[in-house]
Amino acid sequence: MTPSWEAAAVRLRERERWKSPETVFWCAALVAPFVLPDDHLFLSQIAILGLFCLSLDLVLGIAGILSLGQAAFFGLGGYTAGLFAIHVDGDPLLGLVVAMVATSLLGVLAAPLLLGGRDLTRLLITVAVAGILYEAANKWSAVTGGVDGLQGIVIAPLFGKIEFDLGGTVAYWYALAVLFLVFLGLRRLKSSPFGLALAGIRLNPQRMPALGVPVDRRLTVAYAIGGAVAGIAGALLAQTTQFVSLDALSFHRSAELMLILVLGGAGNLYGALLGAIVFSVAHHLLSEINPMYWQFWMGTLLILIVLFAKDGLTGGLSRLRDHLWKGGTAP
Amino acid sequence: MSELLKLTGVRSGYGDAVVIDDMSFSLDEGECLALLGRNGVGKTTLLATLIGAADLHAGELVFRGRDIARVRSQRRAQLGIGWVPQERDVFPSLTVEENLTVVAVDGPWTLRRVYDIFPRLEERRQNLGNQLSGGEQQMLSMGRALMLNPKLLLLDEPLEGLAPIIVQELLNVIRSLVADGGMSVVLVEQHANKILPLAHRALVLERGRTVYWGAAGTLRDEPERLERWLGVRNHQDVRP
Image 1 (cartoon, chains in turn blue, red):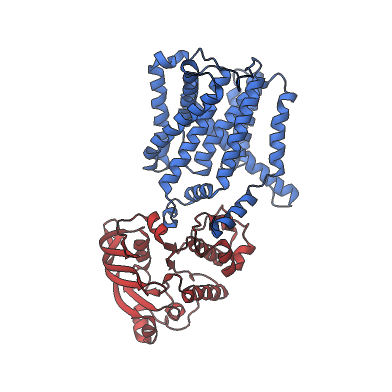
Image 2 (image 1 turned 90 degrees about the vertical axis):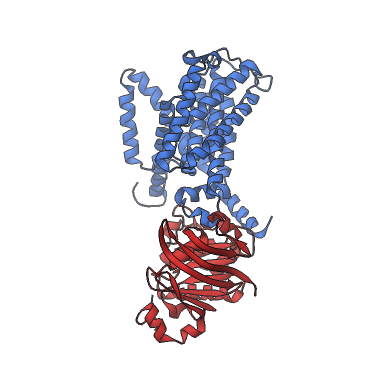
């Protein structure tokens, strides 16, 4: 390693140091199934949603690619894992890898379409790609099950030994482990020179070529990784519910994801996870309290949160911390 | 000294608009060129042409013996052209250190060496780009360009709008960069008196064309011509 990179690597390692709120967060995730013994399936859905939202955080929050089509990767991952389990092998980990490869390939193929345009053009292309996949899955019902969804998925025991149970306990630990590993990878990526280059591209895309950064190549890789993460999330959902529906590819899923990221706060990874938790819990509670008009209350709640925490929940919490501990300005 | 950069009959601008016309000059390794002219004569466009941010309509552009006329901006930077833009363009939400390491390239310029010439940056290494003063942002922008380990450093009005004490600090740094001889420098400034003492050669632009190309010392000794080309009092010690 050369001297300049050695110095940079030392600094990067310093930046990667684990902070205490992070430890608390992941400890809470470990304790959650014991505190909520009857909600393991629900908890696994939150973990999967958090993972899905991490993909958008990488693509939008870190790389700055405006996307309303992450469901394309989520759905493709789900269908790939489901079809792989039905026709080839039911091993869940192998299914995840196959889904990851398929969705990252889609990312590499779709990236050139995106990179030709700017924000709104990109947004439309992401929507279009997801729309094409949605209709393809709808029409190709002999393979995908069409509107009835893909049924008959049988997932083999994890590591050949641990059977998936109806209560969702194994599903939760499986989803949490995958989420944690992907999170660690993204956390490292974010503070790496690659991640910093993505931040630079997001902040000033015109400037980066003059600094020697191959903008298109970096964005292609970021988009493909984001696609792979969404694909893994889709595959996890397919494996833990043993079902994939067209809903996985739908526009509202992508739009909901954007909303969750805005709610949690973009660009810091924890915003995606916190947004997924708050959104899922609010959704769960409000639909129980008011099954007819829960969306009204959900909308009201979201508006309030966004009004009082403009950078999302993580931004609001960090301002609150500064205010309480450092005597800074009021949040 | 071998030739680092050579322009022959360059015509460039933005879209169909021509800003630079019939530009020819060369620069040897380790040389410092003072690029002078009034506002709007095409100094920044010439730098943008060198980095590939402006459209080259005609002419040859040779850098380190290679024709770079059709080479993309990012490749030119990788070949060794570092650019410090007038706007500084530091990344506001990255720390000083992140700004510096974001484009670090292997070579003699390391984080340590940048901190050695700009101790203020080390003191503020955890501060965000938007928490710096104008002078510190200029240092950061220069430091970031140095981390690319360029063979040619393009500085676009680096002293503009800065306090006199910072101007002096930056001039000392530029002087040491030039004296070191490790890289060539193209220095754009409106205040000729500040940079002519540092430069080996000078090029004066008027309406996109060369009106003077030669030794910087010769130009420094001709206050009448400087006054005519650059404006009244420019040859005097005018504070930026």
